[in-house]
Length: 246
Image 1 (cartoon, rainbow, N blue to C red):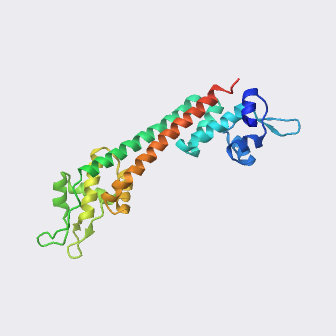
Image 2 (cartoon, rainbow, N blue to C red; image 1 turned 60 degrees about the vertical axis):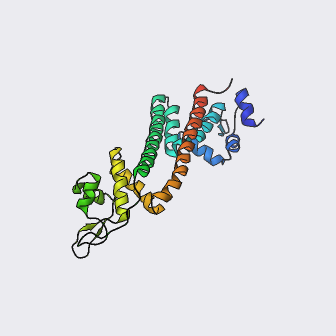
Image 3 (tube, helix red, strand yellow; image 1 turned 45 degrees about the horizontal axis):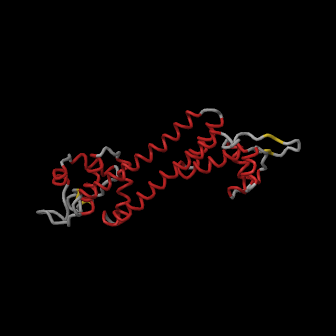
């Protein structure tokens, strides 16, 4: 049994090095966490040294458990709120992290549905009297939207038609038609333009929907890992709120 575990049971005093070693940290990191409000203020010995308690050990463990799921900034804000007896504020921050995870799950599901509903990217064909590709009017009618909507999506970075050098008209090649179809599906799901633009960047970076489909499993696994991390953080914070073992 290590010194920290012994003191959790006996209620004895702990040195900064005891807390640091238990988590593979430096003693300066422990001091920094105290100064940041992650740990409650420590008492001082007559010689001026910090004297930590089992409560500080639980606070540090709670913070380190919160970081993977919530991020450093939110975990710090949660611990600061708890340490100043503002538990409701801490719970609100935790709720926000869960809400973000839920929204990310819904976004992933929307992308999966959009990819499933999307037909293969059409080959570019020459329209009568025009270049290879589709013009804005026919594409808008196919999607059931107005040409102005496609222009708005272009301004937001969702679709990237090229311009015919002779007429200046917008021409949508196969990739642009694909992006317009994905954007249409995601907009129907209520997602904002800026989020759709970020998702379409992933499609372009992957070279199309097919390679992106393979990455969706990693995306889902990452969301599951975040969910488990949120659970672990909740358990650590609950242990801190309950107090040291008597």
